[in-house]
Image (cartoon, rainbow, N blue to C red):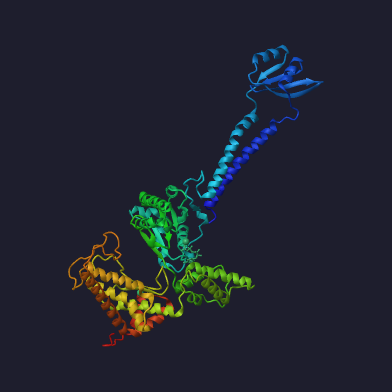
Length: 620
Ligand code: ADP
Ligand code: MG
Ligand code: ZN
């Protein structure tokens, strides 16, 4: 992106410089024009003497000076003489008349002198302004006099947007979601006619380098509309209120350019939860809060059919203020996942388009070697390999360079992105399949949508997705019990296969414990405790399992025992279910290790191929 805030600022500075130069030039020119080398400056007394001697031919009189022509020794001289202040004009005129001098008045001096006077005032002032502006810009971006509150949005021209969906690979679900947005921007009439409401805000969520910024650019490129690009940190300013002013300004500009896309990158820098921000520090959090409030009210304020679509990206959705995610704001969430093996191969294919490859290069092999890599890392691999090949004087990039580039990138990134060792991957595969197989086997569990061992998010090394994940208003006790068993499935599988546990089940256990506790305390699903609601959680916020009520020690102990009983029963069921399907578990683990992601359908197909083997009576 060539056009940017720096560019704008530079333009501003260039203007100031130009104007200053112009004024200086005019000043010098006028001086030069007014300068007459043959003109003599003479004292007023000498002028009077010359008049009296009859040597003066003509004069022009102004309030401050007298100039004219006098003769001396047969030659004519231009002269100028400054009049003493308060000298009597009448006396001078009489004297001139008496000596037959041709005289006329003149406006208070010429253009040059006027300019000099004005400039005498203006120049220092202008210089001051220039210096002031310069230092303010130095202190904090946008704090300068001229750019107060101006949005620093980079406005990318249509012509400069060459990014299209063809440049994005491996994140097909996200692309599909965004195609609708493009369609709206292309044919807004069609949606408006039917009264359809396109989402105002689309939030792209995903790990760093997975292509969120790229996707936003692709949307703008495909829809060929103006694209305002801002980073959240552009709003975070030195002075309170600046960020808010900037948001206001941005929306004004955007409305004027509709249809268009406003893209706020790194939304978490301004959209941090206001509750959490309190702990964040002094003035900073207040400023952020003002900016956030302004953003919220602007998003509420504009007409959804106007054709302004706000896109934002974050890799920390969990810190965002819940108000941002409400309907009418960023209500559409597009998850941009780390790519699986097929996705990585596709991304590599995109990035080798402009690279000369040797015969031996197999992108699928490279994709298999790069679990956990995001798009940015893969792009980096291709680039590193090209540099290596150039350094070695080769005329094509070969497998050797690509393999070496992978090592460079992964060692360089070791701390950043998790690249699992082989034994770890295997363990994660068994763990996730433990969840999946239990879910498939139990009658009331939600169907399995996908199993994956691509590390993602903050803590997950793999995941098992079930659909429908949420949006249920009534859940029955058997369903909850199956849910508990599915949560225990990962742990049970690890114990079954390795005979030992790992730290991988941490969040499963937390979730399961929370659910079991709610079953006992809130849903009255324990025979022992009976139909009593023991805990009253907050109504509109998700409970964190905190217990506001104070229970008697006996009752608390009973509750704990009941929770434990539910969890133990769930683990027992999971372990039994998996023990019965041990060979399925092993077969699927091999498949998952190879493919990294298995869709629900693929899982079922694989299971159907190997008929379910049951080992009766061998329950653990
Ligand atoms: P994010 O905004 O999610 O942190 P970016 O969009 O800035 O990531 O990605 C950085 C670069 O990595 C992109 O410019 C592109 O070259 C490459 N890249 C990332 N994801 C993909 C992808 N899915 N397909 C192709 N290239 C990608
Ligand atoms: Mg980005
Ligand atoms: Zn798990």
